[in-house]
Amino acid sequence: MSERDVEAYLFKAEESLAGAVSECANGRYNNCANRAYYACFQAAVAALVREGVTPPGRGDRWRHEFVQARFVGDLINRRRLYPPTLRETLIQGMRLRQTADYKTERVIAIQANRGLARARACVDAIRAKGTTKQ
Image 1: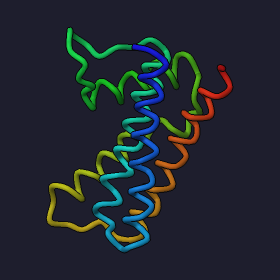
Image 2 (image 1 turned 45 degrees about the vertical axis):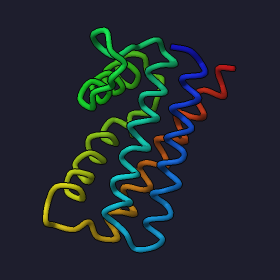
Image 3 (image 1 turned 90 degrees about the vertical axis):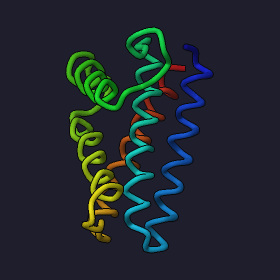
């Protein structure tokens, strides 16, 4: 995978983040939670690709558990490339997305706004790390 792949995942992350912002502004908090999580997930994939991590097996499928484990374990805990404040971002985002997507409970405004703030911090940190390496 190349820097072009990193940019492709970052573009998707930023597009998902913009979608989360729009959905939150329009009171669609379940959709906001979904898009905020995917913004983090796509940004984390970009960070892993940038550091030479590839998905397991022969495929190009990034499994959620794998991305969470490697982003936190490798890039935050071991290599210290990202701040420890991002440790819980993916798992919290996934939990909120699962509520939004699979449960009868609705995501409320404060939850959506907190998830959106976490997503923005995650995408910003990963984007900033890339610009300092170039």
